Length: 110
Image (cartoon, rainbow, N blue to C red):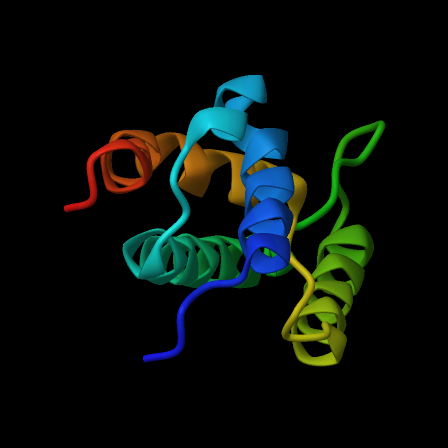
């Protein structure tokens, strides 16, 4: 495997800092961190797919017409979504769930 360049490590630290804060400046970025980040993205993708299928809020009492329109819109969101796009809440949730694993990999190398 090719070694991780300083630029690649800095880029990964910048991405991780969005979820874990400035402490990532001191983390050692290695292949384990990249692998765990891939798992984080995969977890976020499944959450994002589920959120696409949720109906959007309605101000008043939901009607049958509103409900059927929400189902159609949910399906459209699901099938039109770019695979690389994720809801921020899904990324944050996955990052929180994987915090310990990523931090251990970056500070001690698992």
